[in-house]
Length: 412
Image (cartoon, rainbow, N blue to C red; front, side):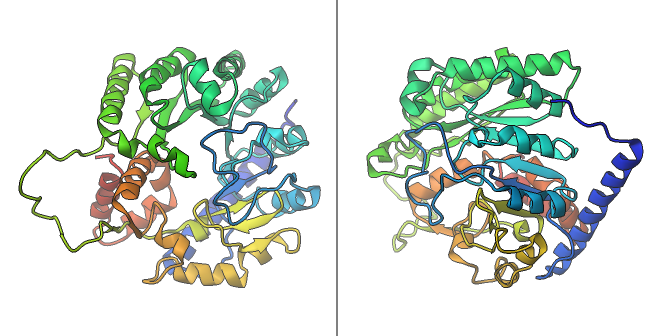
């Protein structure tokens, strides 16, 4: 796939348009305006609702109020995205808005090629099994950040969880990064992303070794959140000492090799005592309230699935619009979106917002431990950059607020 060259003037005009949209977006965030002139700065897109794997820990068949479809995105919907959204965004993430494999889209090469005319940061969430030589070269040529779902380091464990060979994923990484090196590019990256459970936690140190061997940018991990009762005891909440030992070994290995990692914090295991801790509340049901900063996703980000259905983020399944029936700005400023922006930071937000990892929530003891572990695995530096960091620092005592957010996420 040969990328069409653009002139210096076209590149300058694109940068100016993106910068102007970002400035306007920040101003509208400060006002918490319900109706926006700016477009999102980040789009999460799904090209298909299908997947080629049947992973044991996937929630694709359960717990979704918006069920996945066997559909691919239509040309009509993509045309609207291409015309009214892609010229303005700073970042696009392919995948992550659903549990499907984006390279399984029937017209993957066509839509990927159309996105390559833009120079926004492009991230692909993938299981890495549907590659061929041409696709490896295309990803390297475009300079894609690849977030590779890889839940084990050995073939035996990987086959048990995902029903595929982990060696194929290793070949995918080798081939893509080899093309990138041959092209002299330094913006193609591969990140390992692992879902941790009892069956694979012992392989985390080995996954760090493989990441270093293959030239992976970062190895990240987060906790399994079981979708089925029979998976309950796969949750590491029930294996705290084992988890702490394995994470400590993996961190030590990462330091030894110089491999960047992002892992959940270790579980706190209180000592056995006769007297309860000072903060123990005997009347409590075990729930606890955690507060974080305001949410700006309804202003900066949106999720568009394979049918053109628009939702505000990965934590909410509330439908804000439908690009099969609406133009982009009509969906972006729909009455539902306006109402959502008004309530998201209120004292009584929607249920999805109250239970969000980045918002207020009331959860049980065991659930909270797993959620906190996952939250501390977020790339908070990416989350805080641009509009959030700028907004925080513009406020009174902004440096203190920024410190508190980073501390909550385990960065200080």
